Image (cartoon, rainbow, N blue to C red; front, top):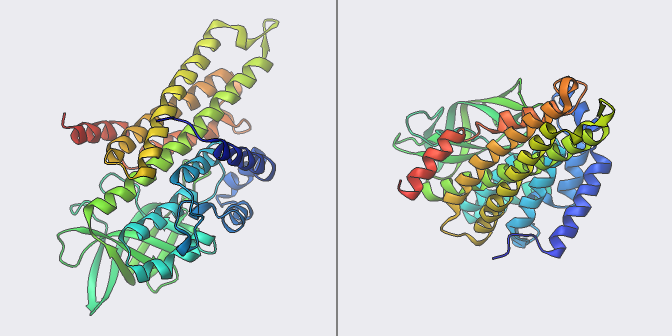
Length: 368
């Protein structure tokens, strides 16, 4: 098994990186970070023209028919550039519909998400979102084949612009959590934007009051697979961001002169950059393996995705922190860019549970 992208995938990476460099440079990212909005022009270009949300989706639903590795590659590049677009949350919603929806639901819901004419929001972010004990939303039977939701979900990424929500809710029987598809324009939906530590990933609170919803499914295995897919995408995002933080630190260390010599020549700075590079090298192997397991629907995927997310959170936090240290006094100021990567690191770290939660979950999965 070769832990690397093939030539065509690398060419795709180069094209995507060039596009993001030209169309969504850091100066543009900062504009949206300050406004709390998302980059609609870049998202339309990625979604409508390049079909990014549906790269690995079957062509019968309007997808590109590629592998999941292409989708992971996109996540890496978007993470590297901190592009404020709803890629991960839309892909998560698509995955939920694919894994749990009926054939009719797939035909009705997927094409618009895949082609980019609709934005999806997977309203999952915490370790207990699918737990019966803490479910914040409950479904009620409204008649044959009809159900409605009442409750609240916090910290929904890009919830303020979503056209379709995929929501975890307690089933009417109250004995399990299922995923439901909800139209953002349906009656009883109220979306409130909230402050976000990660300025490039805005969040919102979504409240439902007797809101019509479509049941996607309640089977634990498919739901767990959806969560693992999102974990893997977040790990790829974090890998790209960590690589960018290292490159930023090295470039600054070569340019910044102190005591008549570049600070990169000092042993302390070399050690910081070396620590970052070692952590990234280790993460690359884990993330690539998780991505390949997802693509092949391997039995190991659940275990490896947990490992990748936990390791990625620690790696990005390390690299973002060290990048600030290398930059010195200017590193933590608003005018400099390192704090944007640190914000991404600290906001991504607790998603689906922090590193300790992922370590405990991994121990359970391997039977320790």
